[in-house]
Amino acid sequence: MIGNLLPRHLELIYTINLIFLEKLNQKFPGDLDKIRILSIVEEGDHKKIRMANLCVIGSSTVNGVA
Image (cartoon, rainbow, N blue to C red):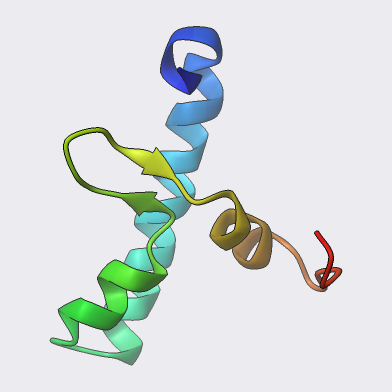
């Protein structure tokens, strides 16, 4: 749905995720389970965006309620 309505936003989310995954791979080399769990994009039949993960990655502080 995001791709149809906001394709540029989705492209930016994928770019942020790529940079984040590269940093994770440097910090936890070979730990694919941890990298998969922390990824912004959940792979599967339908890709899902984990908005909470995006929030934590893109912010310096996060409200617990958010």
